[in-house]
Image (cartoon, rainbow, N blue to C red; front, top):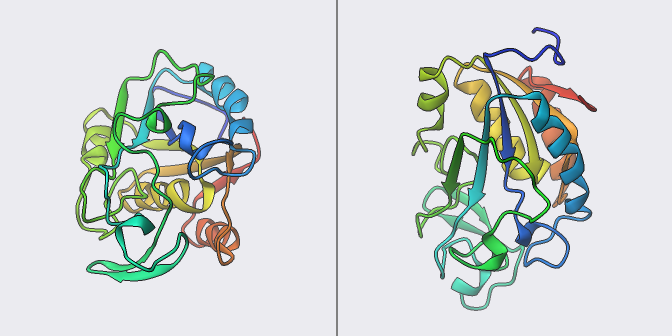
Length: 209
């Protein structure tokens, strides 16, 4: 793998879900989630090509605990596509919680990819829905534009960042996760599982740019 800090025209920065609901005061806050923003803004200056992702759920989404009688947030159910953690209602389309955090400053981002908008299926990854079969189209977009390496940062490291990184690797890209631009939730040792997965799948984890 090339040196992580040598950014070229074939590199793209993928900024995952830096939205109000994932920051303190939001519906599904990642602890110290807002602390990633200064780092991500610094990273963004280094890249000409940037994609932002935005969790974008309809009201009553299947992944919301409120959609299942008797269930509580962080319970796990078996959905048609496999295990699904139930979440507090979050990032509902058009609400302030779904908006990007006001301090995120990346005016030159070239694409905003919305995910999780299908009511019956969740979408952690920027590349596939949680059935691991339904594509978002991002892989095709990146391949067609000639990108070969994806740097990933954002929220949360052990869910949407992890699965975006894994799917980017599966799609044939070199992948680098920038740790200072991430924070995790850590449910049932999900942080340790993410780090183990990165090592197994040849996903480079760097502390900073």
